[in-house]
Image (cartoon, rainbow, N blue to C red):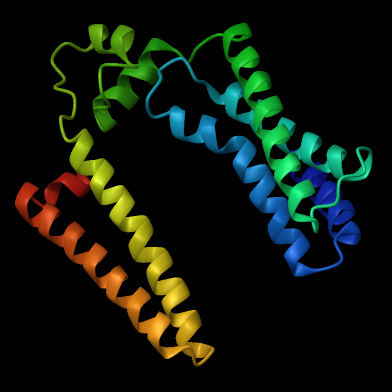
Length: 200
């Protein structure tokens, strides 16, 4: 039933989108609305499946509603910014409300997740108390640096190749150079810490 409903909704939305740019904007807006819950689930034990479902539904409904009923046009930069900000704000209120109104995941599920991912105790205190034998990861800063470097690597290659394809040689080479530097930072850090940290 969920697949059938998703197909119908997707078809309805696709008929209203007039360009591929419109589709990307819709994905960016809904992604911005769900971004917080999808990231915070790794850092806060209380987030459950209903939090994520509520965020996805709210982001979609609010962003589409603002463009259809609210009259905001995502092709206008100021309207696009308003759509993103309102969608993020409303979606955050919705998923936080749903989180506190629904039951958390079972202790068994939370402990199994905690044992596998070993997140910081900061947001996982009650679950960490149930698994005192697990040593949480202490590589938070190194992981953050690698994450930033990974983003720079991906976007540097993406836009660098794009610039080269558009015959903008200097910006393309500079972006690819920055991407290579980011890749070197990741390689050096993982070589120092041990590549097994990626697959633990």
